Length: 120
Image (cartoon, rainbow, N blue to C red; front, side):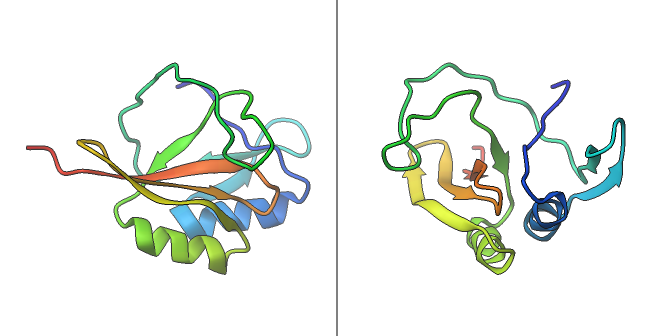
C-alpha cells in the first residue's frame, strides 16, 4: 500500500481517535493540514472487489473500504466509543475469516475493524 488518508473536519480529534483506538501516532508532514501516521505493526494487505452496500443506512458506500486488523475486537470497540466514535455495524462472524465490525470516527469516516480467525 502506498498511501491511506482519512479526511477530517477536526484533525486533532480524528488523530486522537486513531491514537486511542489503534495506537497510531502522528506528526506534521507535507503541506499544512497533513499529518503522517506511524503505525506500530504492518499487517498483510488483502485487496478485493466486492458488491456495493450500505454501511450507513441510506448511504451507498463509495470509494475504497478500509478494514484494519486488531488483536481484540471487543476492546477496540470499547475504545471507539471512549474516543468519540460510533459503532455503525455490530460484530458479525464471517466463517473461516473472523469477526468484523464497522465504526465511524469523529469525522464520520467509516472503518472496518476485524479480528481474524486463528489460522489452522
